[in-house]
Image 1 (tube, one colour):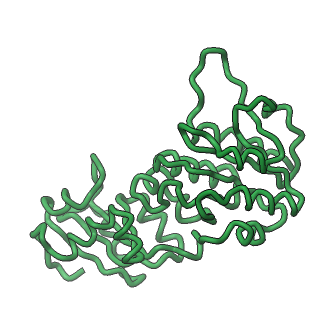
Image 2 (image 1 turned 180 degrees about the vertical axis):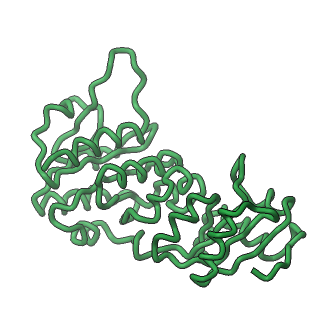
Image 3 (image 1 turned 45 degrees about the vertical axis):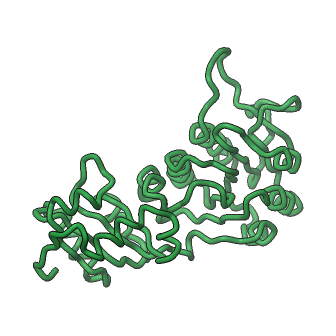
Length: 274
């Protein structure tokens, strides 16, 4: 930390960090950003390489200490004025630190559908997502997966971006730890077919004439669920590729659960099988 303070909102570094709110800029640069002390502390517990730590002038001792640790890991630490930091942060109650890191392709990979199924280990606990567009829902699903014992998340490329700041905020530190595989939009049925060929049962969460209640399933280790889009559910081809459609029984007159809540129930049903 060299003591210089950036005071201009037009500074090239400030503009580039602000640009990382856009998916296109993240893809071009190979970088993503996130706010807050907790997430910086979490990422420092991983091998994800850091690019910048941006401190608000006068940031508290916790942020300063973590910034020094990040600097020892090769990050460039930059201090900005309060006015400039206000432009850079997405938080309503910012803690005075924004971190920029390199996208961890080793944790979050992309594969063709059949290749993804081959990469998944026998018995590995997984959850599949199709077209979940809300970044808050995606982040919450990631957080639930990591907390409850799912070992890998498989999602389609038209899901919300993993590195959207809202996804990262909702996932908390789990985004840095839970492996994911992204498969092409519309190709999840092929991945499911390949998983079933390997001996897994894959269940679609869908209201269907043949749906069975989730509690009636005789689940085995390795069986898994597919969660669909918040408004439109799963593609018909995806449902047809699955072993069976299932529903989560609810009180009459209740609104349907959102994707994150439904996923948490399915995750629990998956991981409690020994």
